[in-house]
Length: 133
Image (cartoon, rainbow, N blue to C red; front, side):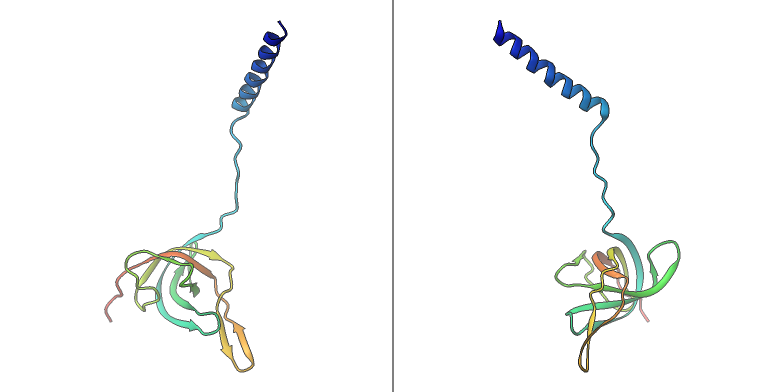
């Protein structure tokens, strides 16, 4: 009789946990987005001589609702390139995602290295064929 009571009690507890979990809904984890989308036309690119990556100047650069202009950084060890592979080629359109706020371009100057301000680092991008000039 005691074993039956223990089994019944365990079944009631398991059923209660399942019912409460189902009624309250699944737990959701919400994270802050780590990347934002971008698109733009490359004007020129320059080597970041201290940090071994490339700063690409986009004109226009679409980071939101209005076009702006500025640098995004291509890091060969962390940026994923989709076919086209014309990263930083003048006249090529780029579309992808970037991590905002990361400052990763440093240039050599007499006495050390200085930071070149950028909008962030490109996570992945696809490129078009450069427009003929």
